[in-house]
Image (cartoon, rainbow, N blue to C red):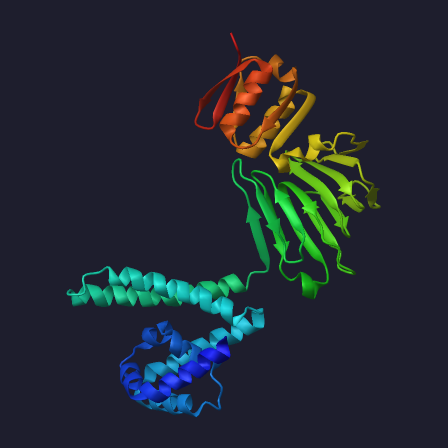
Length: 356
């Protein structure tokens, strides 16, 4: 595609060289950076393209802004190459910003020269800011995925691993995994992992004080309220708990480990009904004779709600129900119907009362 574009550019230069040179000689620095054809030729034109070399020499002689634009674009290109960012990705980001600010400029009354020049200059400055933004974006060492209240997200990582994030959760991925020789994520909240098995490239999940070492498997991690829960559905994982166990603990499918950081307590149980732990990724919270306190904590973590109650004994009542996670109103209705309760909601605070 690029080769085709350069050939087309060469043909245009041959047929319209005089017109283009007349236009380019009047360019300022920002004009050169905004012009897609100029950028393409500066960054990608072959030295053997005699027509472009001729035009370049004329522009260097007639317009000093051209040499400055060359230096800026070459410096950016060197940085992008170092960071491994593709030319296509760079062009797409720059072009989107250029189009955006040209559209803004076009809305201004063109009869008012002062305003036109001011907006034009502002747009040009913002294009340069966009270039600097791309530098900062490309030099990041980690990717961050985050969900808000009641939001779920399916993330496919560059290694083909899939992570389902529950509401109010945050996942940080190490972008340098290939050069580092290992894959690593940090999780806050809850995530369901389907890890792609890659030979000799392990996968680690950091969840507060718990480190989970994975080769290729399916498991759920919930790290909230200073408690980390790890459930293994398929495959094999091992985990370490900082300052608690010296050797890694190996889990088999069906194992559920819960670590409380406050009490430094580690419990391991076997799960029979998997859907009660991982049903959330399919949009359902499933409870079988669980105290209302646990239900309230779960929905509070997912939706970012605060709960108060007129009678604390309500929290000890057991509940058996399935709560849809489609939206808060549906979830609230399911809890109220299952427990014969009334919710009084003000902003994000809910007062729980027993229904009259």
